[in-house]
Length: 325
Ligand code: GZL
Ligand code: ZN
Image (cartoon, rainbow, N blue to C red; front, side, top):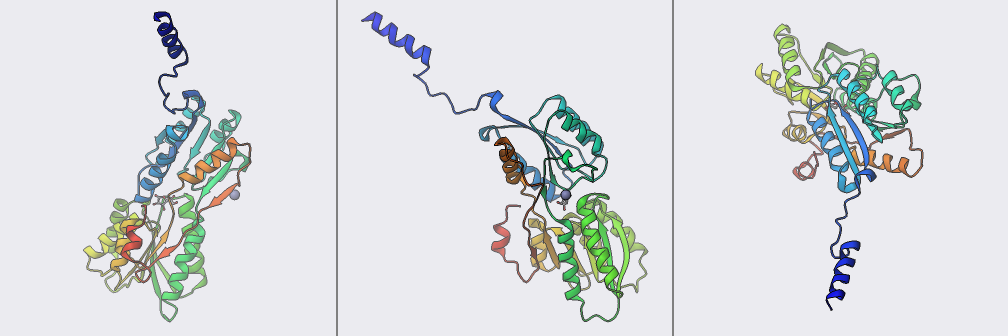
């Protein structure tokens, strides 16, 4: 009898069938993804990072290395080189600005590591330097805002006075949203560009430049539209305008891009006239792209995510409550 018990115990030990091994993929089976993120400059950026962290988890078969560049491109280049040394399986890059990427992307390609661009684009000689791009069409977003201005001021014979607050210079979001407005200015001789200020996509920088601008503005000069290239710039502009007695939504129309929850609240209050959506939830699209490459497919080069726009007329509390960001 004792021999039988020993035999059974030995069998259990050898096969481990006495316990259920947790369903954790072995370390070497995980897909290692190196992510270089711009920073945490805006509500949009925070939501974008959350979206990445929600998909690249061990339970979903990934090991994620996440580097925040604090809005300095050199930090992104250092991070990409580190990922190459660590021999990651994929590099996910949210490029701060469009230029300056050719050599480091060449190094990634030489190392056989596919690069997936997220959100903004890079301006490179050879677009085989990246496997795919997942993001937004920023020019189309700008067109939505310009169309809104056209409709809002179509009966205005006199000047439509516009203050333009730009995003991070040279970023695809800034280039696309600026391009659409500058086309609108060229098409409407009564549209008057009062100033082009750099808000760098942050609330603090915009508050600073807008205060300085308003201090120097002749008191009789009207402002009709403040075209902010993201929500956080709109928050800074509204703070500066209200400090000087402007009633946003009555004396002046503030337009912005991203349509994060805080902007939609101001939009429903009537302080923001138009919020053009820019969807940060790009994690699942990047996951799909990696999975298709893992299966041997060539992913589509560009995948633009669907987006809408909001005014106080089409917004409800349940729409705001139902938003993920
Ligand atoms: C747009 C993204 C921009 C957002 C800003 O996709 O690149 O950068 O509009 C963010 O909020 O800072
Ligand atoms: Zn392209």
